[in-house]
Length: 338
Ligand code: NAD
Ligand code: LMR
Image (cartoon, rainbow, N blue to C red; front, top):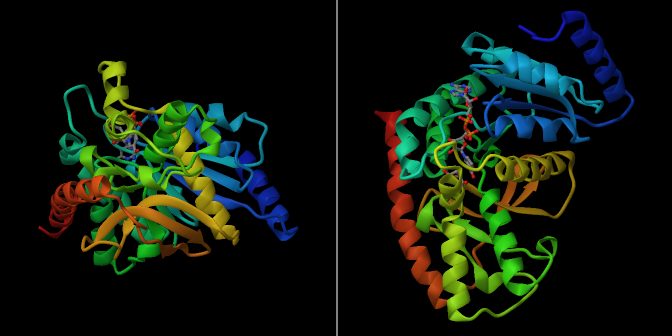
């Protein structure tokens, strides 16, 4: 099934094994949907990540070309390509981290929920294979609608008897990346010095930036709060409209996905103090899933952190977010149960 020449792959693999014996760390990472708009730059950036020793690129189209291309980069990770459903299991066996950007993106005028009918089935199939081939892997789920696809994945894993809530994370990092950028613009700061918690979910009003908790501490006018909240909640739509039918965010998403995957890998390695926002199994609210800050560690999500003090504006936003989230979560769960 390996799309690289077999001899190359096995000699590369031997080298990786030797390196591992020599004490160097390295994780095995698979990208499902690797030939897509997100998948390609994500593959490129993961090939540059020194924590990755083996990179599997899986898609239903075009992986031979993408794999050949990325495999020429003179970085440490060994790259292998896998094409079509019959190679899915080989792509997954032995993986430590599986990143899923497989599925269709939005066009102008669509909501993320409009993608449900196609993407729900894709995510279900991929997660069934994960349950079978690498049930202990950390899963980073990017495919939309995240508010429903994470519950779908959880339900598939529960049915297979492999569900570990610590290992399933919906990727909401792009909301944080956007929030940091837009807030930094307003404050006249370098975005690298800004940290904005974004909680709730990943669609419209469920994206809830906590502007009262921005670091460094700062004050916004009511007008700035309205502007920033609206821009962060509609950042995805801003890109969909600018791309005018050619898809949704891919480059900033690949950047955000790598930032998030790198945090997960550093957690797996045993680094301490790694806190990122993600959409996870949660008891922070009455909903079964919710995005908030989580502490990442050797098992994935080591701790789901509380929301902290919210102001009146944020409490109102939270009520709106929870209403929509409840329906999206239920839709995902019943898709698998029915
Ligand atoms: P794309 O169409 O460019 O790429 C999707 C890839 O998935 C394609 O290469 C396609 O062949 C592949 N694919 C389809 N069915 C598959 C299957 N069964 N198995 C494996 N691969 C399959 O789309 P994109 O722009 O890369 O976006 C992908 C998804 O990510 C969309 O659902 C989009 O809405 C979502 N997204 C999420 C976020 C987020 O913040 N979580 C951000 C941007 C995009
Ligand atoms: C985003 O936030 O950019 C993604 O969820 C893609 C989209 O459809 O907006």
